[in-house]
Amino acid sequence: MSRQHVQSMQLKDGIAWTGIHVDDVWKRKVRLLICHAMGAQPGFDLSQYYPRSKIDIIVKRILHMDMDAFFAAVEQKRRPDIIGKPVVIGGSGDPSKRGVVSTASYEARKFGIHSAMPLCTAYKLCPNAVFLPVDYEEYSRISGIIKDALRGITPILEDVGIDEAFLDISDVKGTSEEIASEIKKKVHAATGLTCSIGIAQNKLLAKIASDMKKPDGLTLIDEKDIADCIWPLTVRKLWGVGPKTEAHLKVLQINTIGDLAAQPIEALVEEFGTAYGSFLHSASRGIDDSELVTHWEPKSSSRETTFQTDIDNWQQIAKHLADLSREVSKDLKRSGYKGKTVTIKIRFSDFKTVTRAKTLEHATDVLEEIRKAAFDCLGRVELKGKKVRLIGVRAGNLEKADCAG
Ligand code: DCP
Ligand code: MG
Image (cartoon, rainbow, N blue to C red):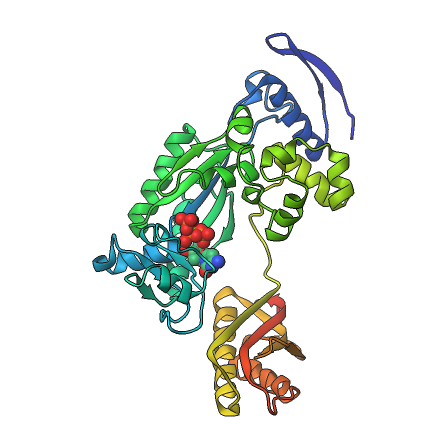
């Protein structure tokens, strides 16, 4: 801690504060500690008790927005005849063929259909559902429109997925309800779709909150709500807890976030290691001081295809490799990057997977160069007597197009 000068003052209701000029990380910790002690709400501005010019202490107000049944809602919007019907989006849209459910409309979810379920299972659960293929390009286009609408609220935005984003609305004027209502209006005006919103003092709680009242929901969570609203939830609701950790916790008879919060940190560290054990301990108490990532550099750009039926015909494999190379080249051009390493991935019918990579002399987004490298790689894979289930092409080692040679 860099200590420059210290002064004391009275804050509120007898809480005394000794002000120390500190660096940003410590400022954040001190800020959280004081606001916690004061029982402050998200958005509470400590500067009313202490001039902001001297020390910047504020509880953050983080908003998480997630679109409702996104792919299905886009399809229902452009095909009004399927509004109100069970709609399942996945694979080629043909439930008699291989593929999994990407998402299902809320009407279809009533039949027990959910993401990642095989399409044939979804068909068994609801043969009358409308099955449609994934139109990723259209969903990406709508996603771009939504993110532009959100940037009109604040530029401090973390783009976390095709249908979700975090916004730091600490400095946006208005109550949380007013800001959420404006976002819902803007998103609806731009796309005709609904979204759900969670607002809390950090990303972890905001993300949990946005999922609580879907669809078209708004949930505000503050520290006082953690015991009642967060602790009864299953551990899977915590961002960073996947199926493996869930299974591990189950063995320890830890099922809810509250069960996790009841564990001493030492027990979690012993079971899960220092980093993850401490994370679980903090997360179960609603503690998260991670910043929004408003800018990131992509590491690679890739496309892959899983075939309806496994193929062993070289012409077909070559055609798919050429198509994937074209898509990767287009993606690179669209995002303004060039790749120096081209990698192909081939998965055989027995699920064995091989990769081959070629590093070029200079980074490129040119289709011909990517395709040539991909075919060089293909030449180094033994295909004889084998059936191929999946092919992928990736451009890695990315450089910004305006800097690349
Ligand atoms: N998606 C996918 N495969 C998955 C999960 C999701 O392809 N296993 C796609 C389809 C979803 C989109 O990502 O429409 C967004 O994922 P969400 O988890 O936000 O799910 P939805 O938006 O469909 O539903 P919800 O209303 O629960 O957010
Ligand atoms: Mg969603």
